[in-house]
Image 1 (cartoon, helix red, strand yellow):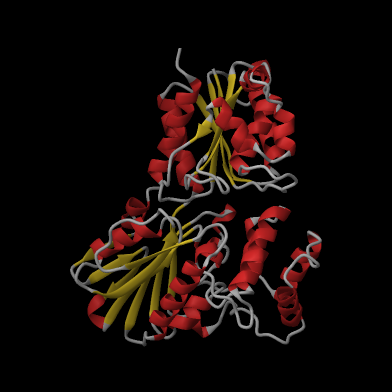
Image 2 (cartoon, rainbow, N blue to C red):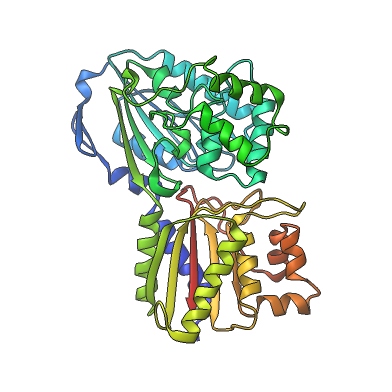
Length: 440
């Protein structure tokens, strides 16, 4: 018999390979002499005085590598901001490594340099951008008089309160000079071509990387509602709350909206997303002999609740053969959230797997994996974790109470003790999370 844990990893890695950033860029851009074809548009490089390359995110380095190869001999300058440990050798583009998920001073300094570079651009210049998930944290540029410390405290609070990525980025955009169309404003009137690896549900352009080159669909009023929804007004740094209130009262300018002239010379192209990873994972599972169904690429909600629901689907397959008969593989993608109640260590994928393990106690036919495609789950070195019908029993034999670890949000130490962490290292891509239920 196959080891289900190895099968789960094989299916997960097949999904990762499908969203490899260099290949994603090359599938949407090609060069024919001095003609650059991006999606459905052509650009004559002879019409531009200079070509610049900028970007940010966990996958920005391999994306930039592909762009350097395509633009060989034409780049005047370039700068990207990536997460620590996510750099790759580049020839003509400066790399700044910065902190994630909490922004740091290195990210602030790198973003200031990037903005300075854009301010040099004129109407005869072309700016190629590479953005992926993670750029929101990696590229802090607080609106004065806000400072880095206040941005850090706000980010930490939003991560812990259970806010969705859409909600987090709505607030980030209204505290930043580069998000919410800010980079397009800084580069205007240059021509911008932005290649984007999506890490948000629905591939909403103004949410991915907080939409640095996209018209913003959120408002200061939305930010106020988000703060009130989670009851965090008194926990926010006072200058941040005051800034949002002033914006909602019309005392601060809104982020640029659809129809603003700064977007007239901007092309945004999504080069990869979660759905592509799911399709590749499905193909691999079917090759391995599993009847496979993809539930959705839009899974969201509290991680521990999502874990229980996916575990119940596995149990239903055992009982009735629905929605697909064994041997079965059920795939899903998206991004859940965690409301932090304890002081443990973990991330949304590990918490989901721990919840699934408790629900699957004794169901030895069912195995479960949840992993972040970026290789990092929360502030840990794990991408996620693997659980099955024996996980809870093995834990109890080792003197571990699964419910205690879940109550402390301490899934990392639970799975590390059992040897069931999903460890990939930095994958240099980022298209949200993949979840897999396997029924032998």
